[in-house]
Image: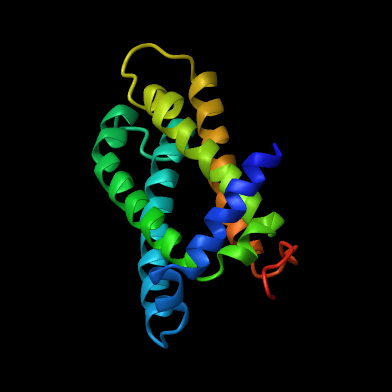
Length: 172
């Protein structure tokens, strides 16, 4: 485990000193510009997640097949996730060492990894299933999805409010 944390710390140091990290950090306009794209993508991603999960829960869109809705929104989900991951990396690179020691950031990244894995495996499989599938499985998938993505959002929001444990020798 020690070697993994050392590798992550080295990666964070590299990000912090990178062209991206330094350039965005030292620019008056780049950080807000990148953050705008991050937040717009967040809205689109959240919208697709909510639409599909409300349909799986049977709360909305009862007349439309869930599978069709899931297929229709997947390109928008994929594009917004890509924009969020790229813009998120750029934002991360401006404070990588601070994020290394942030429990909120670590929670967000754990939820993000689980949410992406769950979404592209079980959730899409269940949402796109036109065949007979128990309503219980659909609801469980929707609740798990909403919980994981809410964890990503809440972890991201908490980053500014939870103290960071700066790594030794980080200079801050």
